[in-house]
View 1 (cartoon, rainbow over the protein chains, first blue to last red):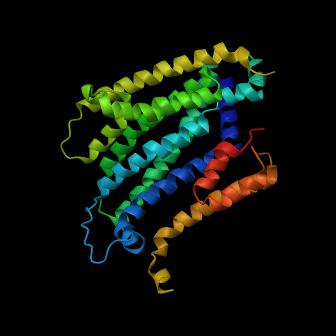
View 2: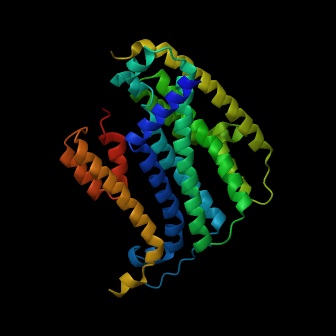
View 3: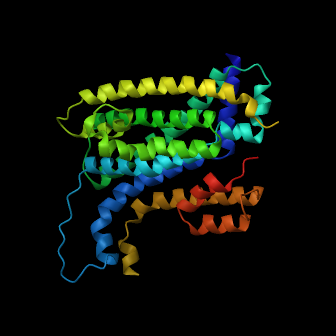
Length: 260
Length: 66
């Protein structure tokens, strides 16, 4: 067990040395603040720079705080996921390439521990960032819009976190399997592109990990059907477990590919 | 100048401060290490001019891992 805590410490040190513990939370907080602020001032922004014709009277839709959470989710689903994929695409394949892995693999090391230490620290950094971002957005929504029930927000955050853990697991497992470029490409496909595919032809099935993020916003609707959500969460957790096992075995299989 | 006074600075301020922190950390990192993909002068311009995206792009693509 002492080996595992050493690996955890190594991961933490690496993530603070390359400033990931700093810039990823700040990026998520900025996007979290930007969304309510721009939505609140949209009519004024359009009036001053939108080049509206004289006397035009455009009815702005009345946004409620719950709608802002949904639009923030749309923002995180694209830019946020892109940041996660690009920031962590090389976390295992990059170590193989730059030789850090050589120093690790010559020691008696459990590849399960190796993968799990990366998984835990990466999830800690990413989930912390997403939580801080949503909390910052919540603060601004309370100021600029209406009061949103705390219970609904926490249910939303908890459900969305499962999707984030899924994304992190996909990125790390692919990074263990492929070189950095391939891992990034396939991870972007599996998280961003597949989301679009799932929303286009996914009307035929209601249970899938790619729908968890959309189901998270159902907490804000008073009487939405939650049965699909629970099934999707179970499927997502199963996916995560399978991907962790896949990732650990791939880290072991690719150990010989490390540069010495 | 009257338009400047109507901007709700107390709402915008946290955004500016966070962006500034991001920019300063990126700049200090570039100048201290100077190990970047491509000329580091170019990265300084990207960080300073590309207000929010600049530092993020630098941290993702510009930093060369030791």
